[in-house]
Length: 126
Image (cartoon, rainbow, N blue to C red):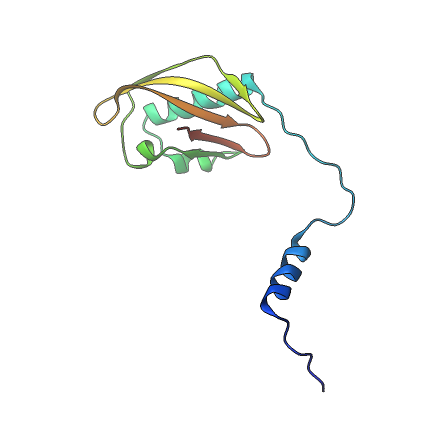
């Protein structure tokens, strides 16, 4: 049995990258913002936080809602919230939200980015 000589490292990496590329001429999927749906999702998420649910509770829903908010994950409590108007931002919708809660939240304005496709996600923006 004959063995092939080992590939140089660079060639092996290029081969792996090429193997990971999609093959064929598939149709490109274009995702678009859905502000009305995003508003309902963000209201659901913030109401769940206010009512004592966890991010994991939302992930267990059908369909799952993925939430990335460090203040919530660290145990901060939310008493109330006010949503601003949603603005399309590529395939997502951005919202300015006023959060009210005990420290460390206090009263502050933050931005949430909500995506409805391909998965539902809510992330605290910068």
